[in-house]
Length: 146
Image (cartoon, rainbow, N blue to C red; front, top):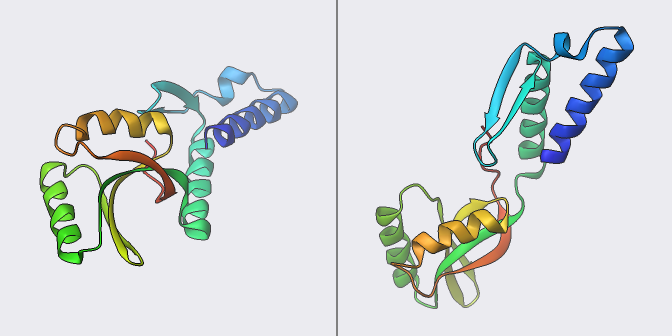
């Protein structure tokens, strides 16, 4: 995703230079900030619109993409898994929870983390209440980009 943004920005700069405009004229309109990396991008409003369209297309066409989740429960009892999911949701409402079944076991996984660093940071908070929790690779729903 970050590579796509960089390519779009580079393409905008090249097109602006080809049209004879200065780079600062073409990039002064809109600014937005990615909260995860604290990088501030100053871009034309058409760039922001294009990025949003790409995100919508990826979400509609693929639905999920590779990422990380934290597994907090694993067992063969459906009621135990459901209560673990409810318990986690009450303690940590900011993380989405997922109950999945892979015969014959139920798993409760939480979060939609794009990279392992985000997942480990959340794991450090969650480990206090769920000492057996661990980070795992999984298909995740695209978290919102700001």
